Length: 181
Image (cartoon, rainbow, N blue to C red; front, side, top):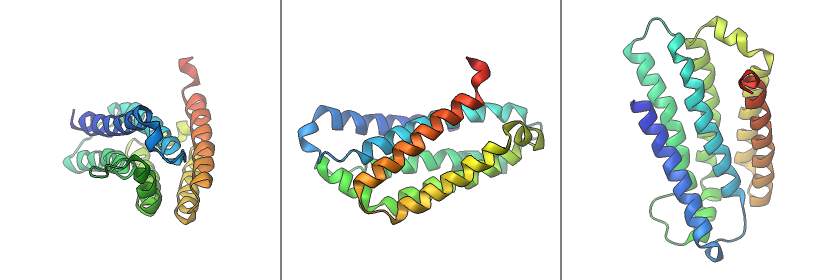
């Protein structure tokens, strides 16, 4: 229940931020990297929630696994606060804030992949094997994209990097859950 609450806060904050941008587009600076990374975060957050459905496979729970899962969920909320901070009234400045705070955002983004590996191992070797080799390729690619994004100052380049990651994520999720189609 607490994990769902944290995830809900991350989704709410990101959707609220996107809504503000849509309500007053004249106040934005026409650089859509914040929007693209918002979509990346929304997809990642929803996928996290779905991914955590596999927690039912864990036979032996303990308090520290629970704390770990709460910390993992909290990464998504923290990323949403860096996309859409509390006290910046000027909408155009929100994108500037995101660009200036990109190191923190992408450090959390990279850290989410480290947590993902640990989470997968908690679910067991069988679960890891079921994901196949592409899981490790995707995880490594996510960390590399985060490290590259930390070095980028150009908002347009960050937008394109986000679109590449969003496309790869859609393909990965579709491949992973293709038996649902």
